[in-house]
Each structure stands twice: as C-alpha cells, then as structure tokens.
Amino acid sequence: MTTESGYFTESTSAQVVAARNAKAQDARLQQVMEVITRKLHEAVKEIEPTEEEWFRAIMFLTDTGHMCTDWRQEFILLSDVLGVSMLVDAINNRKPSGASESTVLGPFHVADAPELPMGSDICLDRKGDPMLVHGRILDTEGHPIAGAKIDVWQANDEGFYDVQQKGLQPDFNLRGVFRTGPDGRYHFRGVKPRFYPIPDDGPVGKLLAALGRHPFRPAHLHFIIEAEGHARLVTHIFDPDDPYIHSDAVFGVKESLMADFRPVSDPDALAAAGFSGPYYDTEFDFVLVRA
Ligand code: BEZ
Ligand code: FE
Image (cartoon, rainbow, N blue to C red; front, side):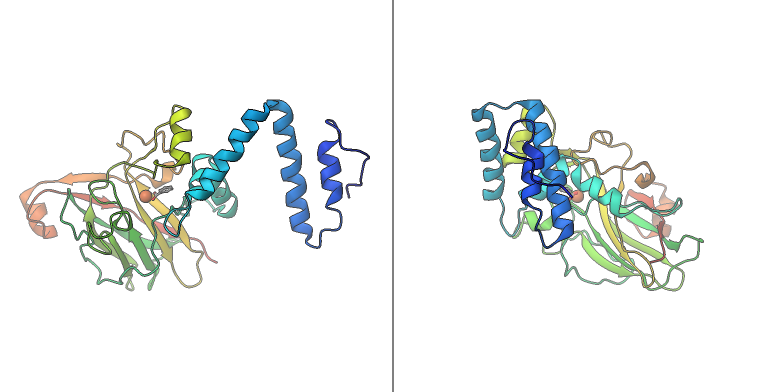
C-alpha cells in the first residue's frame, strides 16, 4: 500500500498522487489509477513538455471528444492507431496453437444484419469483382461445428461500408449472417475487397498525417463466429497481396489470417460454381476454441 509521502515535488509526484487514492472502494480502480499515474508522470518527466505543448495535448483530446457521435468513436480510433486496441485484443484472446486468431472489431459492425440462406450473395450494389468465400467452422480437434453463426461484413468496391454511405448504398450491403449445417461448411458470395482509409477527417487523421503515417487498412473481410460451447471469435481474413498488408493503420494483420484470393476464369470451373464471368475463390477454415 502506497502511503502519503510529504509534499508534492517533481521527484515524489506519482507517489503523492497515488497515496491520495488510498481510500478508494474499488481495489481494481485504485490499481489502475496507480499504474496510469505512475506511467503518465514518468512520460511527462521524460518529455518535459512546455506549457504550450501540454495545452496542445489537452486540445487534441478535447477535439477527439468533440468528434464523437453515435456513429463515430474517435477515442476507439485513437486506441486503434496507437496499437492499444490490438494489445487489449491480444491479452484477452490468447489461443492455443491451431485455433484461429482474433483481430480488431472495428466500428462498422451492425447487430441486426439479416440471416441469409447459405450461398447468398451479400453484394447488393453489384460493384467490383465477384468473389466466392467458403470453408469450414471446426473445433480444435478438426471436427465440424454444426449450427455455428457466421456474421460477415465488408466494405464495397469503393472502400466504404454501407453505414458510411446511408442512402447511397443499399441497406445491409455486404453484410450477412449464415448458419452452418452438420458438415460445418459455409459459403457465400461477396466482392473482392480493396484497401480503404480509416475515417481520417478528424483529429486522429491529422495526427497520422503529422506522424507521416497513411490511414489505410489492407483489404479484408470481417467475421464474428459464434457456436454453443465455444469462445466467440472476432476476426478478419486478409489479402496477402495488398499494398498495405505490412503497414495496416491499426496493426490488425496476423500471418495466420492471410487468405488466398484465387482468380478463376476457366469456363468449366465458372459453370460448376454457377458464375457467368471470372470470379475470385477464397477458401478459409475457422477453428474455434472450447469455451
Ligand atoms: C475496420 O476494419 O472496419 C476498421 C477497424 C479499425 C478502425 C477503423 C476501421
Ligand atoms: Fe474493415
């Protein structure tokens, strides 16, 4: 337990503040505030900001708050570009080898996407290169999981989610919920994803520009996979050939989440898959851990 250690000075600053919290009712809050105070004071001592610089920091956080609405969470975006979202994700989703890895949820999931028959085309705006996505939902022993719920969403060919272009894109464009049968298999049609910028018209975008960083995320599809008795998986699959695959603005890429976006143009293969023109074939199995 930290005790009050005299007057506040440059050298005692963190201990004096922490000691003032000694009567906190919530031990976890007390611990969190002790660590944050200690690390923050350490940073301030190392940086030695001028008063103008500290005010600029305060104004950055103020602007970040002002940017937030029901549809825009600029603080989560800040956590994303600082790598904190991925760090929290890593700490909370440690997986045994062989299990599919998780990555950031992102701000564009909607809870009420329609449940669709297996095989449906989720691309309602008819833009871009058609794609077939298929694979299996498995447990860590390799058994298929029946009744797994697959919630998928992706940006359109111009790099926007439907919720960013309400009225321009059809509602629920490039979203769908599917349920596996006894074989654990899933398949649906979408569009080959492209890289796109995270929302960069606010303070976080300005910060990235000032740091000489681009705002792009490499091409990906989002998935949330749930099955009874198994841990929920929030993840993506990525295009390994994307120009931003090694510099994702939010650090979400993992090697195990690379998928092969295989171009198909052979007439027999097109006919067998029911496509009238060339498409991309993407196969990916997801492995869930027992809850
Ligand atoms: C996304 O992939 O949808 C996303 C993730 C983090 C920040 C912005 C967008
Ligand atoms: Fe995304």
